[in-house]
Amino acid sequence: MIEIKKIENIYCVGRNFEGHAKELGNKVPAAPLIFQKSNSTINFTNKIEVPKNKTIEHELEVVVLIGKNGSAKTHKEARSFISGFSVGLDLTDRELQGDLKKKGLPWFAAKSFKGSAVLDKNFKPECPKEFYLNVNHKLKQKGSLKDMIFSFEDIIFHISKIVDFKKGDIIFTGTPEGVGTLERGDQIEMGFTSHYTKKLFVV
Image 1 (cartoon, helix red, strand yellow):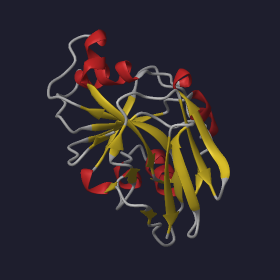
Image 2 (tube, one colour):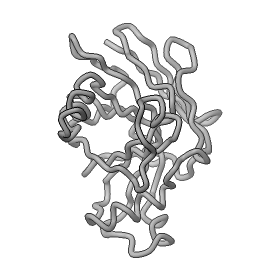
Image 3 (cartoon, one colour):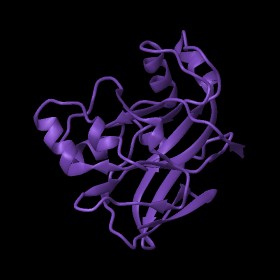
């Protein structure tokens, strides 16, 4: 395991699984759709706080850890920037996101609230092919790397055209279909299938 001690920037990829794009009525993008969360949203604990009077949905994702400074000059070079893999939840204020989208405004407020970037600080050196999320012992989301529209290399190369990476950056690489609302008292288990799990509680 690779334990991360400090996170720099948080990049996220929207609509990277066709099933998820369709379940929210969105078109499949022609290029990676990139947005950001503030690094103050990181939540390494086993508790998820759901704000009162908010509709907060879970989005299970593979999280990539960037291991060096700079930018990938070629698609082939992009892989060398990855130093580890974990799973995380990109928590989303869905009602607010919908309002912002209708107005043509950025999603920041719907994505970057306290504790909305949930993940384990222990990253694996290799990425298993499947990942999952159980809520109250029922399977809610299951993803496979083969179903990603844009690969890890695609994403890193695309971001490299915009900014330079810093060692300690992380990328939430997109969620499969099955997103849903979290309620207080929910018990959550997420991980790579047959490899790793993290248990969380919604408070």
